[in-house]
Image (cartoon, rainbow, N blue to C red; front, side, top):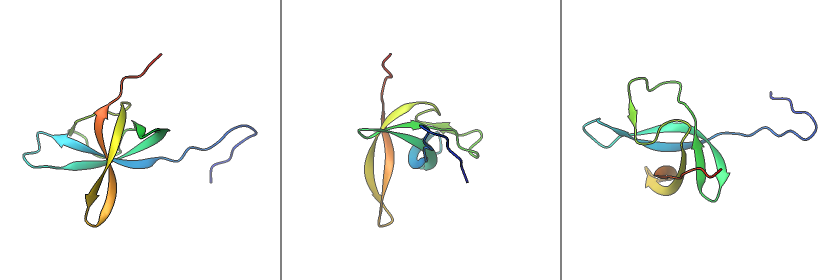
Amino acid sequence: MARRGAGQSVMAATIVYVRLLDEGTDVMRPVPAFALGHGKFRLLAAKDGVGEIWEFRPGTVVRCGLQRFDDNDILVAVEEIPETL
């Protein structure tokens, strides 16, 4: 279990689906991501998926939309969001 000190919080990752390119068919990879608010997420690296070409690379901030898949709503990365300084 994660421990936290005063003033610290533990952020939990959520799953965002990212489209894979060059697969020959429509395929999406479930990727852990941190919610940044307002429908934006920062993609993290997946432990598997070596050699895959993602539509959005790990570390990218993306806007997500809901998509219905097998009777469930999933978060799908739809647009890269430029980071502001």
